[in-house]
Amino acid sequence: MLKAGFMSRVLAGDTAQATADLPPALREALLAGTHTSFASGFGAALYLAAAVVVTIATSVWLLTREADA
Image (cartoon, rainbow, N blue to C red; front, side, top):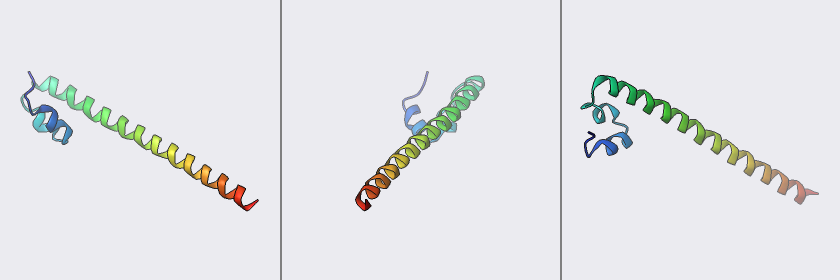
């Protein structure tokens, strides 16, 4: 059973303390999943930021090109 502070510790990045009471096998599986999900989520955020930057840059380029013409 997970303790009440589990989610707040995980969100704070203290996964070692959050999983200290779990059996070793479950702890390792949970930590591996945590690291993988964090990395994939961070990668998705970077892709989204890049798409926004490209969209804004293209819009500015098109608007300034039309203003110069």
